[in-house]
Image 1 (tube, rainbow, N blue to C red):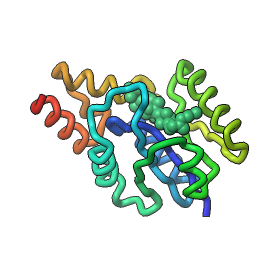
Image 2: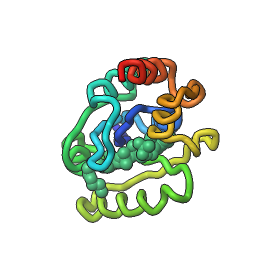
Image 3: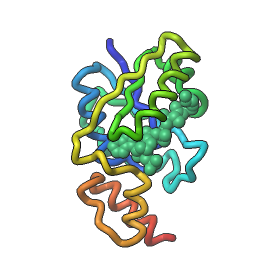
Length: 160
Ligand code: COA
């Protein structure tokens, strides 16, 4: 059983993340989408809200599990008996951050390997923060997120 972990803050999940998820499930028997809070970013959605959005989007793909975690990613990977971390690389500016994170994870646990995948080029310019900002300012993000995420974003804007 080849199992990989795709970690991230997913606040919220975008079509760029889903593109990576599709590609990873072509290679692995099981993919765990591991949601965690960012220490540096203030979230819009609670971890439970992110989990329930992602679960409803990927429910038809039986290879995928969605799990919230706290603490170090390498500990989560060990608990779930996986040594592969999937990360998306969109543009050159992602590289330095990802490179450091991959090397730090590998130096903390030499069994861990990070596998980088490139999303479709139509998603290279999107990020969760940009999708939130565009929605907050009245723009349409329907080409960047699934319908359920767009609805939740609009609800957040309305409630604030
Ligand atoms: N398509 C579109 N956007 C993408 C994307 C893709 N394929 N891949 C990443 N992004 C965007 C995200 O939306 C996010 O945007 P934002 O900054 O506007 O929110 C940004 O790129 C960062 O991506 P994300 O995957 O969410 O990374 P992160 O920096 O939030 O998460 C963790 C990094 C969670 C993997 C890392 O902090 C971690 O492992 N934390 C656990 C604690 C730990 O072990 N720390 C030590 C690590 S060495």
